[in-house]
Length: 237
Image 1 (cartoon, rainbow, N blue to C red):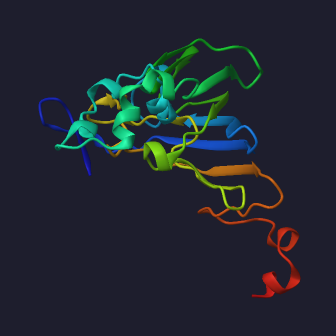
Image 2 (image 1 turned 30 degrees about the horizontal axis):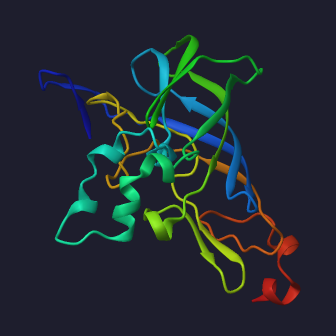
């Protein structure tokens, strides 16, 4: 792929931004809440100097103040309205308390960084310009209360099984993550509406998950401690 200037003339070779994540997350089942801390190392592989970064806060699609609730007309299609559609009419009440709650954004030394939340996006202002080919490390702390996905739909949230008092959690788009800074449009920071797809920067992930002892965690990636968490028979299989 080639990078082309606004006039269409060939420019520099295509560049790909990179973001590495070191995430420590806890599942609070009793309160149906996710609590996380992540250290992001962002590599500016573009030819541009950057004064700020954009992150996606996808979980804010469930915030009652998100404008996605005022533009989604799918619940009103047809001659009949579903239970979910009726609940959608009272989204301010039914979704109260949902959405990402940012507990802090700091540099790696713990100094607070200025940030601005705009619906499902968050801009982090850098204390000094990030030069081309440079990198910056910063920390985001957050938590959010999960949504009942069987009542409201969506990919992420929980499902409750009353017969045995258990929850099934399907965690998607659950951590604040870097937007793409592309060679053709700059920051890709359009709002996330829940149904659209998206692009993300490449990177490495180190994730530590703390969950109740009776839970099984299914995830992509490579487990580092099978012998510690599986029985001898399970490990042999």
